[in-house]
Length: 116
Length: 114
Image (cartoon, rainbow over all chains, first blue to last red):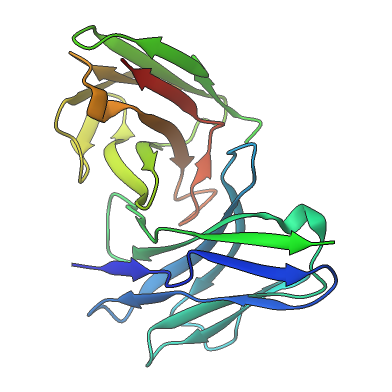
């Protein structure tokens, strides 16, 4: 069974600095998708970035980028120039390509604190 | 997120009573999901639907049932609520033709079972 592990329950960073959140996953599949979602205090779950496993190039969305290491089964999220609005829970999620139900497997989350 | 609403947003109920949560979408997406979120567990899938009247179980389906009689509505029912079902419930939608692999979430419903 696939599992997703986020080993950092909480991280803190100074405003304007860079922080990296870790995510590892366990799968025997070769084709899959990986996601980072953000959940601010409002509890709304917001997609931050996604990565297709067949793509070697790391996904980037403005200040957010990933370091996808397929062989190591690692999918870390880097946030550059951290802003107060980045404070939230961050969840890593995995989906097998061949799952007809599009089921996501989730990590337990990392709480990100931004220090002004 | 603007196309997904959940009702009620907050509910307090007593053990043993039935509870129905509603998810409504205006995006005409094929897939709909119910998750629960508990501290230390991330999100866990309860049930999902891949079309009108087509539903299937997720990893934590015991004690829950669902129905989807229209594309836009997906109902989650707790037949007899228990304290272990105190949680935050999220609805999500996706569609292969538009969102592909990405799921979009509603605002959540906080349920407290006393």
